[in-house]
Length: 455
Length: 110
Image (tube, rainbow over all chains, first blue to last red; front, side):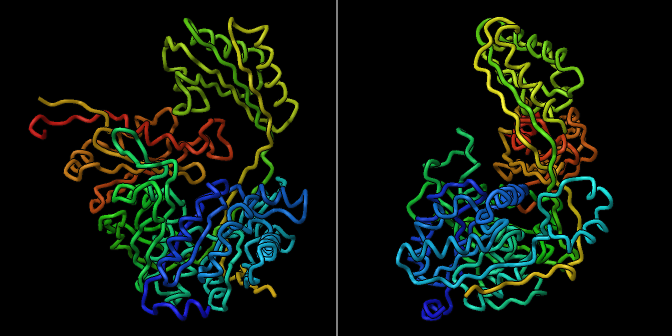
């Protein structure tokens, strides 16, 4: 706190993002922290590590070992930058607590101890986990008897920015959350820094869209963007992660870490602005209904783009809750055919499998001819005449509640080595457990969202 | 002379997914082509392009200040990331299916 107060009082808040999902590059944070440190103004670093099912996977990990269930890459992500963040007053906000925020906090303390750093003040966000028996009645009321027919792995409400802001106000160096809405990781620091009220819809709307631009990490700085010859990206192998300069009104300029690859242009910002948006006038989060129907992006040159014209309307009265449950088994098998007649041999192999695996709803892909554009029912595949692709990988997949049925698919694909068409090679098979989800909306008054500062 | 090009020649886009719903942005590479894109990349044509995925609804939102539009396609992901048997359970690639849509460029335009 004192370091922040000693800095330029009127400098805009800088928020960097060093992960867009669990599994993102663990060396992303270094250049972001170095850039934030040079800024010498108030700054914050967020890591977004929680896709829809990540939390359920974390719950499963915690069942195996009560000490786990937080981001598995936590030490690789945070270890190298913890010293710099503490030294420069760069506060860390993340959902890397996943299913076990206290476990993540313990790991962070152990990191600080082993590096000889001062002990960071860590706040944990509570209230998102609805998997306990106390919440069953609420889930049953909203989801009906369906929730009784499944084996629930995780149930979490998407919390908003308020408890994050409160934790930062209380002096947290690190805020560890489980499920919070992704943009709220950024809205929280903006609320805390500028003292924005929880019903200041225009400013919350702008801050939310700043968070939305940051939440997928490099997806706004040239990651997931390159299309050679049309949209070229310099040095994609070392793409820089984003930093937003957020002003008192919540509006932002997006830029990226210094001395990195990638680029920030009107095009990269537009693609991310519309990513996972449905109705542009009503982007719903726990904090606000953001409205980008009149938004504009303006290049300021030098990898800097301003987002303007975002509006905000009152937040939804209910919070989204996602319930994750065991979803049976997914079986997959692949085999390759190459050379003259490869596609017709792959198609024959698919036909053999369909006959052998009667009773299983089989998806068929002819990778190299027709695959991921197609549908599970095989309508596109069926409508297309056989071609003469010369390097085709046949893939079949099926889902079943019964593990034995999943295993049957794997055996039949393997048996193509001797019993299938000529020249098939490179069989790979896998059977894995699936997770499925259902969602509902719960009145926010029934969710106890708060922070706890750990001693 | 008019000529036909794939949408990819004049626009870019990205797919997002939530559950069984896909959204695909279509953004003019050059804002001067936006009216042409609005005129030809219609809900009806997009529904036809994705017919094999049986969309229950296709909606288009216009964002003229971004020279962009946002398509929302309901129930096109075979259950989405949890239920689909597709290798690409999210439908991440679908923007590039939409970008294959043929566009007629009037002769005097270029």
